[in-house]
Length: 371
Image (cartoon, rainbow, N blue to C red; front, side, top):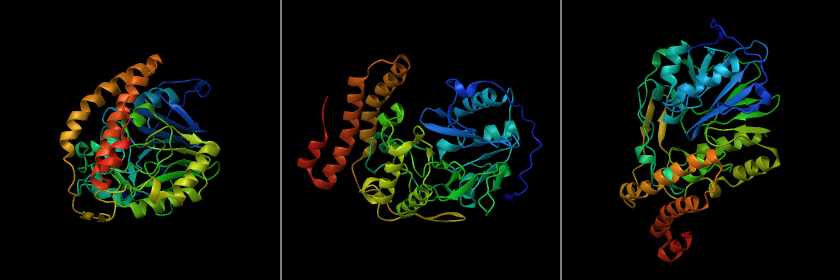
């Protein structure tokens, strides 16, 4: 049974550690705004929001299966040893946002809130629309065939977000329904200072590119193409978020962005979504999957395209080596020009093969630049 919980009362004890962490640099977490912190695990972000008056706090998304330890260390650093939130709130249920949800909910003994349209994918009732490895954009997209899409089952912990848009336990925040990337996707917004936690409705890196994701290159972009099942809904969601005129955007992938650069990029994305965000081809590029409150009802047929499995296996050798070097050397602050060029070439190669299929070889070969 799923409960619509409107009491938002918690009897969980919470200790707050008074210190100077706001003025210090921590590898465990980064500051987003007043009473908002985030942490990154591999390529995905998780966030903590604290209510200034009550002192209660909630966790937004739970990352990968490996993320639980890092999340708990962040919470301990912020609030003291063995700190526990009042709740976990999920922007959506894709594998890289719910990897640690079962473990954390059990250990903390806290409820998990989601939009009611995400219930089928969090209670074992339905798998998501299959990820689409045929979209253009980079190697993260080409490897989408290996990403988990099956439903998890945390039904006993689930609570439905209230229909009035309020965020449980946290005054001054509201959630906004932003579907397209996932059926019940939500974003969170604090109107007082216009802080936006967008989930994957908008991201601040090129999530299809291994190079961009691992190096955290800043680029305000549409939702990750390989999991987005309804591009018209995704476009409307971006327009909804742009209309809020946020001052700070924190997303599921990439670093937080602020300032005029972010505002111009968001306006450009909103006004030119079909050209800059929507893939030119792919399973859902021209026809959306059909979903309802029970789960997936219809999925468009696959496109008959290049056998990406063979390409992925070959290129993955380059990706693994290059990514390892990038992660290792980022800590040592070494120059990575050759490694990055090799990885960029591998990504250009995958895109050029798409162009071969769509526009012919002469134009496609212009896309590849060898280091």
